[in-house]
Length: 108
Image (tube, rainbow, N blue to C red; front, side, top):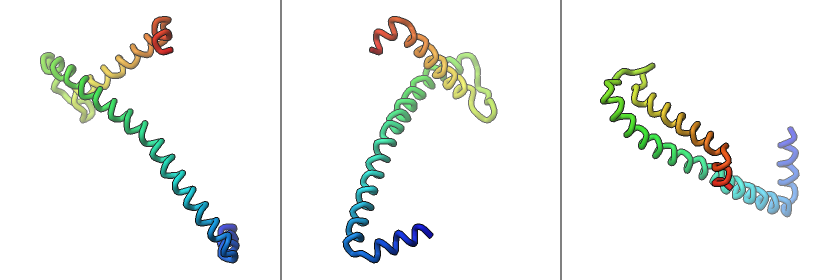
């Protein structure tokens, strides 16, 4: 009901119609720029994680092959599970290093 009233008010005054179009155009530009600024860091993080996963998969692939880990866990290959586990351990270790005095000095 409130929307119909606003549409009727905008349609009733030609000058306001022009301002409403400018407002709509400004909102559209703001929304597009905001969407890009939100998605860009997300895409960068996904690219870095993909690259890290590929590097870890190479390391784990040779180890799992030599240890004969060719099984699947819940439909996921054991090499994939080990790769994710390796990335979690590396992330945990990096977080622990960042909390030390030397880590805080490096990070700023």
